[in-house]
Structures are given as C-alpha cells and as structure tokens.
Image (cartoon, rainbow, N blue to C red; front, side, top):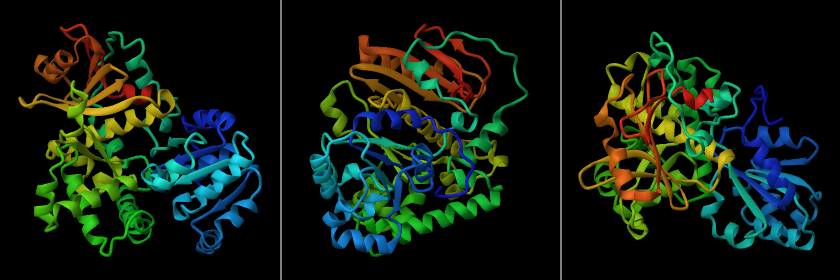
Length: 415
C-alpha cells in the first residue's frame, strides 16, 4: 500500500469498479493525501503500480513516452499522471491498438480536465472520477445517502428528543476535515500537518500545472479566500489587497482550483446565458485546511460564529459534492443570489430540475430562513423540486411551504 493508514471503506470504490468493467482508462482525480493511491491499490492489488512521484521514473517516462507505455503490462496503475502529461497520447495509441476495459488506472493530484492533451487524447476512452477528502458518512462507516434522499423520495417529518447540544461536536468535525493523515492527529499536530501540506504543494506541485516564480503570493491568496470562504468572488478587490493585477489573480485562482485547494461555485440563473457572467462563490475544498488558515479552535464557536458559519457552508457543499460522485455524477452545483441579496448557499441541478440547500448554524429555524429558497423556487418555477435548510437541531420539520424542510445537519453522516 502507499501508506500505513488503516483502510476506511470509500463509497466511491463501487463506482470505480463499474468504470473499470467497461472503460479502457479510468482516471481518479483529487487532492494530494485524499487517499487515491491507497484506494486504487486496495481495489486492484494485483496490478503493477508505478508512482510518478519518483523523479527518476518521471525522467524515464518523459524522455520516451511511447517506449515507456509500450513496455508496461496490459493492466497497470500510474499514480500522479499529471507529472508526465506526455504519456497521455501514448496511452491513447496503446488503447486504440488494444481496446479492453480496465487497462489503465490513472490518478492525479491536479485536475487533468484542465489539460487540453487529456481531453483531446483520451476522449471516449477515459472515465474521470473525483475522490474528495473523507466525508463524515465515510468516517462513520455509512454509505452516505443524504444526497440520494434529497433528490429522491425526500425527507419525512421526524421528531427526535432534543440533545444537550451537538454544536461542540459539529465544530470538531469542521476543524478536523477529511484528510486521512491529518484527522488522526491531535489539534496542534493537525495544524502543523496542514501547513506542511500546503508548503509541499507550493514547492512542488505548482510546477505541474503552471509557471509561477513566487509561490508566497499564491499562499497569501489562499489565505484571503479562506477568510472570505462562501463569499462572492471579487477579483479586483483581491488584486488590490495583494498588489497584483486582475489577470494574475485570475490565473492564481485557476491554479488553486486545478490543485483541488479551492472550489469555485458558479451562480445559478434561470437564463442559462447569464450564469456565465454572474459572480461565483469561492470555497476551500477541505474545512480542516480552512480552519488552520483561519486559526479556529472549537472554543471559538460562540465568539467567531460568522467564521464558523462560512466554514460550515463550505463543509456542507464539500459533503454534497463528494456524495454526488457515487449518487449521480451528472448533478451540478451552484449558488443563488439576486439583486435583492436573497441567497441560497447551494443549488443542485439535474437537467432542468432544481433543488435548494440553505445552511444555518442555529438550532432552530424560522420563516425568514426560507426567504432565499422561496425566491429560488419562484425563479425556477415548475422545475423546482424541494428546499432544504440544514440546521443544528434534532428533528426533520416540514415548514409552512410544504416544499421546504428543516433537516438536522447530522443527517449528512447518519443516512
């Protein structure tokens, strides 16, 4: 195995096996240290496994991509393929000569979908899946059916005895995040790991996706995004704060997204054309990493509620996006905000169907909490399905608008 971490059952494993049964090249993308290497070796331990983090192996593969691929076994796993993108064309040729399902497993810590040679070379030959950091349902040993329930039969009202308070436990979940190595460490050691993780990416991985001479500005930008997580992206303001021009900020944001450090959530609009011009929201991909950059502690829950609210929003979106990988990869995620500043934290679409998810840190909900969902429902018309308010309470409650439910955030890992 790639490391000595105890195997946690990953819900995406079944989807990977299905892809291997009918597709020549299966590519598993995701952040470094999210468990990609461990998972593919666990699923296919009999395969030859080559780690392209080995510099000598990289030099050999880059010097003669065609010869390197020809010398490989029929079925092979190539880890960290973004380090030698020249191999992709040779893999295409090999697949075209012998088109069998499951021939190549590729993993990447940079998003190959941004690389033209990947989409051009392996179109129709490769299925791409994304492995996120561990979800809360995976930590609990559950399959993770919250999203399936939300877009399927929906929730039913359910009254449960009130707990003393689940907020301290929820705060701890947010601060731990989903990197398997980090979650096993005590809080102070976890922060040290997060910072060393970022340093490693800034010193090594950036060169796989961009030419950046000074990575310190990139780290400063990431810290800015962490402090504004869940806010509308304002490239000009970020540029002023960091003393960089607009084009440089846009380029740096692209790099952070390619490395799976941030997620840009586009704006939903009834008019599809306008979705392309409205401002996206930015979120850090892992809540633990964001918490380290924000220097948050569990005891800050009451005194830094605004920061925890933003962190919770990013965390919920991360849980939902991860569950989409094994529930319905065709789902798309957006945010909604109109000129009256009515907002919905997460809009989920499948074709024309629309669902809304609002996130609250409070243990109770009132009518005003569904204001954004009501506006979204009005905009979506007959395409609107249901609205969900995730909150810190204990019971599933149907609101006065029968399409809206208040659902405990704990359902994200209990279902």
